[in-house]
Image (tube, rainbow, N blue to C red; front, top):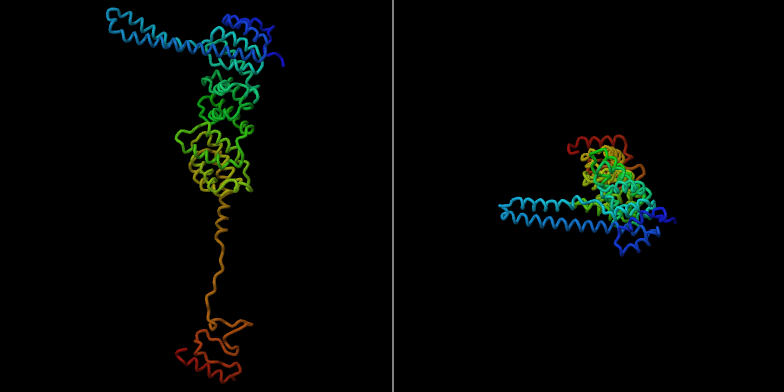
Length: 435
């Protein structure tokens, strides 16, 4: 591996750093810097960190001195009636000492020298030193540092990103909101491009907030689109969970929605996990993975998240899942949702899903409403005609059936009567007023 710093080429820069160190530290520092390896860059990073710490301590001391001077001046005002100019000088001095720490943001000479040396390295491991002072906007070197970061950040890999310290990774995350200035657009886009291919779960909250937040200016809208692209790549590249854990993530998302203050990083992780896992459900496995209760909670998110961050993308995935699975449990939530949102793409997806699910609901109703055979009323033998080939009958086969004549009054009529006898019997029955 080539040297990170070439001592022969950058000897003057390295010597400039050494010359600004205390006498007792120069020999050791010169030896380390002349190696031109990772340890050399680590030393430069440490020098930058130490100088920043010294400036912070110095600023606090000056601020405390200014506050003390102001307190003394205010307490002594009654005694300065004859000499009001003394009180004015004391107040002015205290105010200046309070303001100085705020204005004193320029790096020290040693810090400038260390940064200047690190800027000549094209190795990704020099990024640690660059990240330490990128926020020093008053420094001429900071503009060069930002230009160098814009060039190096898109080259980040997951391995090189993990090699940064937690503080340095947090600095990279913070650069996405770098003072919200239009001039920093290129730097913010470079950070999002780097996280798109190298970021981990720790950046989800910040990226998701940018991707789902409001964008009032063209610059903000450009950053939001880049953040949305970054989110889509993170969904593909990162592993958020297993399909068996889907009920747990549904519960966690519902719990976040019920809190007054959402833990945004947790919410972002849950929402992105649902978006990654829901497409893996199939008509063959979703009933074994999600109970009716969990499916109801999932579709309930359509109603409870109408105004949440990133709700549109999550709602769209939930609606598509219900349509793909043919899950009629979603119909009630979809009917409520379609009247509660004006989101065009999601509303159109809901209409399409309802066109698939409502016929399924009707079929389920029909399957639960079976046609039943009517039960025949009990009938007396004398009320029905005799079958063509009866197996058994209480009425003798040579007797005529009478539907309205009680059994005890039925007079047997022989089938072999002569015509005159039959006419007599019929005449007798007709003349009887009770028949």
